[in-house]
Length: 431
Image 1: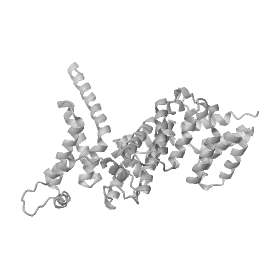
Image 2: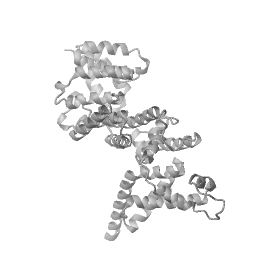
Image 3: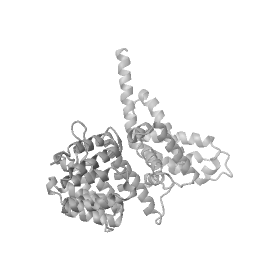
Image 4: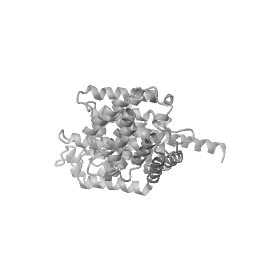
């Protein structure tokens, strides 16, 4: 390769990176604006993708435009006009734009389309969020579609993050779009009556993405920080769009506070480091500050803390403690009790047991854990025997603890976590 050829290749690579960065930032706004006008999320994404392809083809030759986001929107507009010009649905689309076709041989529907796309509507992104997270879709489909439309992630990136084949992710996205179209899901905000349930679906999707990054369910890595970052970005956008919803701020607070520990959750070799063993100097105190601010916003709404807000309050107890010994476990146990009353679940009860053990002794915690061993939902939940093993170890019942750690290691699909649990089992020597 000549020097000139190498320079050209380097320039093209740099331009492609710029295109990818712009796309990651602007794609959700672009798709949202197109979906508002077309009423079809699938078509909107196709038009946006066409604009992306055009940028990848042209920018290396012409240079990156001064306003790349505006360039993408203009290209998508022209593509939309071309599609509608050839579409058999011209009459219906024109009617939706309020144009009369009776007297004009060449109606100005294309101009109307461009004008509609030029409108600045703050709710576009919010409409897209509620559409991608619609309850008519399965949980897996909602996660995949949200990351694709709002995160700008490729199917390859989503597949890599969740350790599933790329074809599986692609099928989920295609089926999700078809399901939305078949169910005639409108591209609009839910009514006041439907908002709580619909918002709960949105928050669930965002937190599922975050949790997969915070504690990977499978694979070779203990955490996937890029997923945590993506969920945080989505949560922050949602908080800006719904400033009066306490649970949105509660979820953002929870994610900010938990994300602050990411760097300390693994050692130099990638091995897991448990909360009480973490170097708190490695916690990200900027994220801690943001989390505490978001928690205050949730509290200031006056509506009381919901499940996410209560979990954020628990995380705040850890964040405020300079050392593990200073943790206010009595308050954490009380917060878990409130959470169990508001959103009862076996997992919440298991977490409450751990907090009770720290506040009032391992025997008190073990009594709660033992009652959970008969719960069918926790039969294959590896953290149940892991927690029981920890409490038994504190009580000096090492043989029983070893068996629990080995059982937990056999249940987890995460390689790093399995190694940690087997190491704990091996460390259960008598005395």
